[in-house]
Length: 81
Image 1: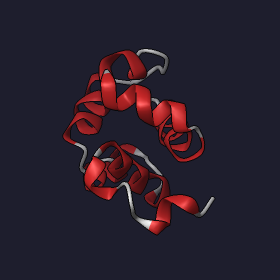
Image 2: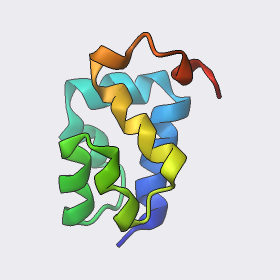
Image 3: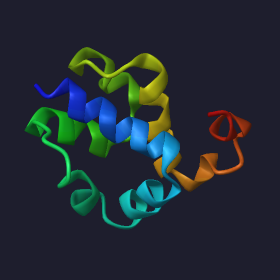
Image 4: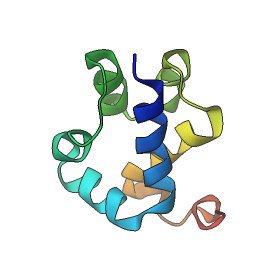
């Protein structure tokens, strides 16, 4: 497993608006820049943060996976860095 790269992707979703846009438009391309296992990629594609914790994702960073769903765009949580 590549916990560092999993958490790095989630951190980039937190800090880089461009990372969110890229992941929304083409998740496979966005993930290609990270050294992730097949299991990690599959968990990220579900967009369910609960599946990331057993793979080593930090609990708070895992929530940023929800930014890929436009339903959560107006959530004030995302503005808190």
